[in-house]
Amino acid sequence: MEWILDKNQVGYEDAHSAMEARVAGIRENTADELVWLLEHPPLYTGGTSAKEGDLLDDRFPVYQTGRGGQYTYHGPGQRVGYVMLDLKKRQQVPDIKKYVWQLEEWIIRTLAKFDVKGERREGRVGIWVVRDNAKEDKIAAIGVRVRHWVTFHGVAINVNPDLSHYSGIVPCGINEHGVTSLADLGVDVSMDDVDAAMQSAFAAVFG
Image 1: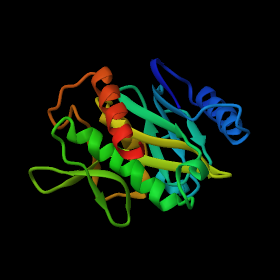
Image 2: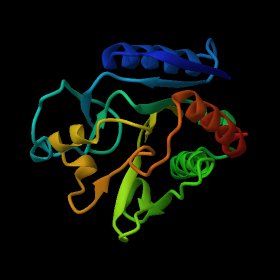
Image 3: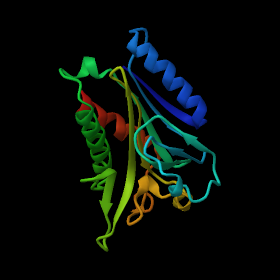
Image 4: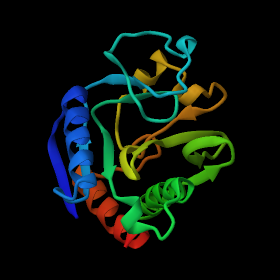
């Protein structure tokens, strides 16, 4: 299995093309599994359940994707993890729900390394934190696609993005809760710190 830790911003179309090629290679046994950590320039992506009315302001480029989920934002200060794994080799019986649970667990364990308690919520995709005022904010997004049991797309953890950029969408179709980041919670970490935490937590969850 390979890791790529990208120091530069990667355009969405370039990343998507690279993912498509790698997924095909994994399926044909000509390429290794890959976890690719990167940042995008500011943009919005719509998943297969995206509702037109949830795009409030298309101030950034908008890409329709084949992943599950609704609208989300990607941009500088957010660590995106694109995960390309062969579930047939990793699971005795390929199970997408188990895989999504593992992605959630990966994020939860990553956040725990910075003393942040990330939580799952029934009926709400992503990972959430409870603020001092009992308000719940989303700190990480999950969007998955699986083709012939090979995964792509993945997760996005808010490290220190410009949270005002989320105002152009209804994030994941959820109006009643906000978004946050490690920096917004008062946690000052570098992207290198986050990468190291993600690698360590990934090994613990996925082996």
